[in-house]
Image (cartoon, rainbow, N blue to C red; front, side, top):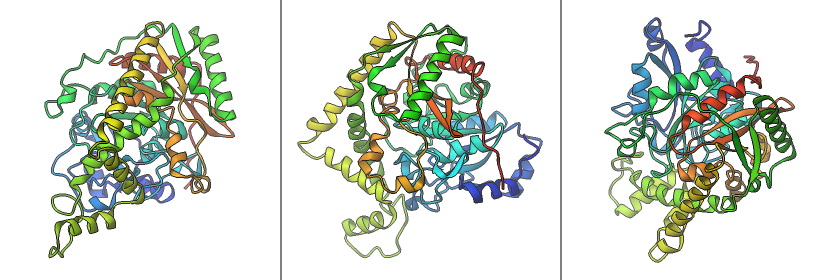
Length: 446
């Protein structure tokens, strides 16, 4: 591990950037010296036996699980030291990591800007700590978005590649555990560790072996629809990146049609909020959630008081939206229709992959916004910001966000998507990209 790393240094870093919701204590850190080979963090919605796991929500304050999530257990068994739990939007509900009950992380390149969400703390930790590995979770773009805003690599594997056992769910059919790091070599090292079948998560039990062999990339497709509604600085950086790919990597980059792209976002929010409203029903102050002393009341009143007091504003909004979509008579109109859209988007990706090895698009439509600008956004504006990261998440395909440019020192990322189980294509491209594009990391001043 880095000689510079210490609990005192991490504490000072956290005071400035609000990365962690909880840090390792001095005694445990010193005990691990000499035994651990690398340090990593985990998003706050991954269960840990020695840290609270609160998913960024006040309703889970005080909850310490009696077990480790499978991904965390595997990293620990491989010699990793868990140094802290990273701040996140409550239950993953957010694009800018401003919905966290335990601190809003600050962008390492400009503390007045967002880290992105919902894995904002994870991305900030990687940008600030050399050699750091962050476990993160993506439902609709919660790895790619903060990776782009913070100028790091964000890998979201195929749905089912990494066991979800020990994950505090947002949306069961969409949640994926992945990694953030600074280099493709780190991905090659740590992705195989957390991948593989796990009897505790049936969705991980039917998967091919993770291939690490290089995969020749010849053609990459750019959906025309993905270039609409993005800012000038993002478009310029993206166009420059595709020129580098063609000229220096000798890979053909061509435009493709993907008309279903515009339907992915509404379908995602119907599915995700519907599943979230059922998953969050357990946080009622009985088995899970803050427990009230006064129980002498009707159960509806008891549940409502607990949930009204301890859920955040965005969590309440998404619970209501999901519950509405699941009402009697509305299931066919919304949920089943959204499932049909998901299938259409999947088939369109598969059609493109018949002729192309990867699909590429900007990760986010704009650079990391200032907190003052986020305050002026309406909820719908925030949801629309996910329109580029949602499609691969909706269909469970592996994707990676890589830095591709900088605008006045603020990072810009692009996102590459591969067919199911073909993470090796993304790893190979990431290695090639690093040979022609130099990543920049912020100077840390405490």
